[in-house]
Image (cartoon, rainbow, N blue to C red; front, side, top):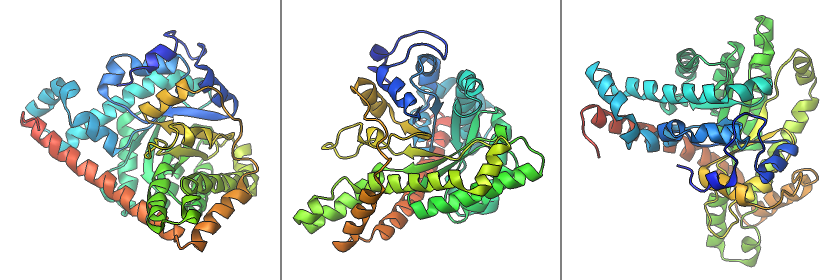
Amino acid sequence: MISSIDCAISRTSGFEASMNRTVSRLAHEGVSVWLDDLNRGLLRSGEVERLVGSGVIVGVTTNPTIFHNALGRGADYEEELRLLRSNGISALEAIRVLTSGDVREACDVLRPVYEQTGGRDGRVSIEVDPRWAHDTDRTIDEARQLWTLIDRPNVMVKIPATVEGLPAVTAVLADGISVNVTLIFSAQRYEQVIEAFLTGLEQARSAGRRLDRIGSVASFFVSRVDTEVDRRLDLLETPAAAALRGRAAIANARLAYLRYEAMLRDSRWVELSAAGALPLRPLWASTGVKDPAYDQTRYVMELVAPGTVNTMPAATLDAVIAHRGVPGNRIAGSYDDAREVLSRLGEIGIDFDAVLDLLEHEGITKFRTSWQALIEDVELLLHGVRR
C-alpha cells in the first residue's frame, strides 16, 4: 500500500485535477508516469482512483512477481477464493480469474485517461504465462486469451522480448492486440523489437484494422543492469572500475532512446504514423534503486526525454513526488558520453553483452519462479491453507 503519497496529492477527482508539481514537470517534458504495482487493496481502498484522479499516474504495469506478492498473501482475495474453491476451479484458472479481474477494474479506472489521450496512456499491462517465454505459439495463444478475457480496449498484454517472443509480438499486433514488450536489456534487442513492431502494424493495416486503437511500449529494464555491472566492477577493486559504478544502466538506456529516435525517422514508421499508428514508446522499467548509496529518483530524473514512459514501484513514486525540480531532457546530447561509458567497461574487462544476456535469462527465471510459487500458494489457499 502506498502510504505517504496521500499527503502529497490532492484528493480531487477528474483527470484535469491539479497534480504534484514534480509529476507535472515530468509530464511537461514528455514523460508519462505509470505505477508498477497493482493489488486488490490498492483498488478497493480507492488509492488507484485517487492517484489517477490527481494526475499523478496515467498507467499501471504488473508482472508475475507483483501478483505473487498480492495473491500469495490471500487476505484481500479470501471471499473470491472461497467461491472459486466451491466451483472446483484449478489454481491456474483461479489466478487468471483473480488477476484479470484486478486488471479489468484498473482499466476501468484509467479509461478516462485512455480516452483523453487518444490511447497514448491510460493503459494497464498484464503478462503472459512466463513459462512460455521461449514458446512462440503458446505465447500467441495466451495473449489472445488474455485480450478476450479482460475485454477492455486499454489493456496491454506483456510479451517477453526473447528471440521466440519477437514473432509473437508481430502476430499479436497484427491481430489488433496492444502489446507491452517486456524484459528488454540491450539496445540491439530493442532494434529487433522495433522490427517486430513495424511488421506487426503493417500486417494489421493490411488486414484493415484501425491502427489508432493499437498501443505498444517497449519495456527497457534499467536498475538491474547497474546491479550486475557494479558487482563486477567492485570485484576489480581499481579506481577505473570505481569511476564507472552506477553509469552503465543509464548509458545503456540512453543508447536505446537513440534507436527510438531513429525509428521515428524510418520511412516505414512515417507511413504507419500517417495512417494513425501510435509509436512504440520506450518504457523505463526496473526503476527502483537497488543500491542505497544512489538517489532513489536517479532512474527517473536521469532518463527524462520526450515520448517516454517511466513505470515506478511505490517507493520510487513516493520519492519522485517528494523531489524538488526536474532537470529537463537528460538524454539529448548524451550519446557520446554513453558510448564512452560502455567502451571503458570493455577496456577494463567487463563483457557488457554477456551481462545483458545473463540479465535476460535471470529475468525470465525470476518471473517463472514467482509464477510457480504463486500457483503453489493459490493451490494451498484453495484448500484453505495459508503459508
